[in-house]
Length: 114
Image (cartoon, rainbow, N blue to C red; front, side, top):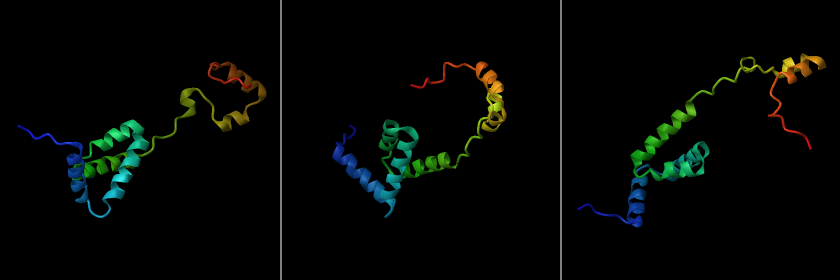
């Protein structure tokens, strides 16, 4: 019959595993926690961290973090592709051209002042 561990036994086993990571174990685990919470949100980041039970789990999570962090930024959206003008184009427009441009776009997304 399998042995059932209580929370204290699990925590002690986890700490023993994390000790295998060396003197920087706490800093490494803290960095992972901050990264996953910032990337996935508080709840999902905490869930990701709760899955780290062994030193090997921490190393795998660090590899995933490195992959996330090394992905290139997507290129900025091309304003012309969305039918929008750039700030430079807007600055060159006359008042009549700006009015015509504004009239040709959905105004429901513009917040009213006041």
